[in-house]
Amino acid sequence: MIVVHSSIPIDPDRFDEAKEFIATLAERSRAEDGTVRYRAMVDIEASATVRFFEQYEDEAAWTAHTESEHYEEFMDRLPDLVDGPMETVNVVNGEAHVHRFTADDLDGDSA
Image (cartoon, rainbow, N blue to C red; front, side, top):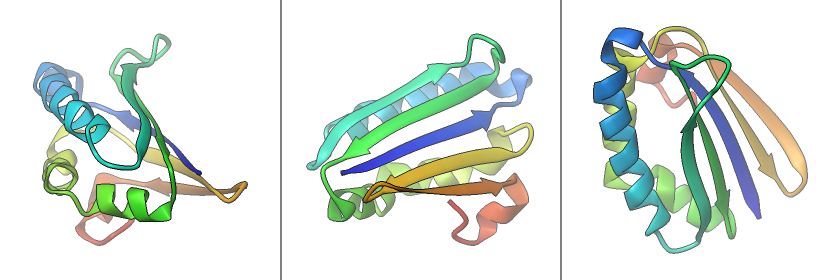
């Protein structure tokens, strides 16, 4: 089982655009084989921050998600939508891995 929690601060001026894009990403991600749970929600303490909660059956399902067309499209657009540092916590086989990154880091494979 793989669990992922990501926090992404969205530029308030682009929030409506980002929200629609994220809703589509979440819908498509929930339909993937091996996805147990995939939710995107707004943080009640930081209203322009979106938090993703994801759960996959195994690493193969998680990898397939990160190689999907909708995920790659999201990652391509993300630098234009964010407003600050992001964080992803991946729990793989009971071990947590924390990744902190900025929009500038997204040119490579940071997440």
